[in-house]
Length: 147
Image (cartoon, rainbow, N blue to C red):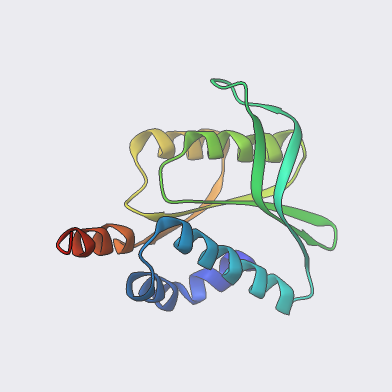
């Protein structure tokens, strides 16, 4: 439901990102709010920043946190939103899919998904969306001219 909403509104979302935002944290917050509003319209329960208690990454000894968890009747969806090609996010989603039996979605915005991340996506069978935008880079260049 959320993925379909984002796909349906992809053009306007990327235009809003390109036209309205300068910082990557603002873009991630915007996309988080879009997801929350979409889920709220469908009367779904949502939690942000959900700690994964039984997860430790393979290369780091960090505990994981999922950006958004959506509860839809009998299904649970875990969503990560990233600007970068974060393999760590894909590891967390893999854990959620395999150990918790949740549906997962990785939303990647900005520059294209690189080879390493695409290999993990295929290996872990992770559903993803890519929103191409240069917003944070475009505005950074513009601001550098003023400094």
